[in-house]
Figure (cartoon, helix red, strand yellow):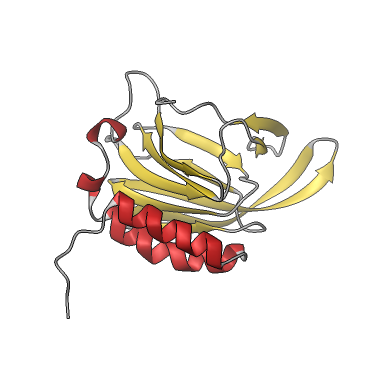
Length: 186
């Protein structure tokens, strides 16, 4: 029987809390979270409107919920915004609320001296409603908004990325430190 109830951010957070208590495997967590995030992104009205747009001249990045085993953020990519290859140091699930995003997945082979060989594993254009899973070992990716409109996404991670020491790579394989900025709303 089909339900007419709306799946809300609060419902999603409750489900995330339960799943992250029940599961320790990043693969299992992301497998269980992905269909729930797909439900959530089909209801953008459940996200406060101020977290669905970017301030003038910058990408929007907002914390929606912070918990010990996960956090939920809203990310607004402006036209042409790009993030080069980077890692996360945790599991993640990303869902497209509006528009589309291009994700490039990489296989990284360390070559020493702060360099690596980056091999493109896949390039995917994710439309509205699509969900992408990141698990350690398969979580290095780059993101790009190739459109002329803002792309809005919900990101869920097993750790808070703000201040977390991570890595990114230039197209030539040069490794650089990456420390994510604070969120715009906290």
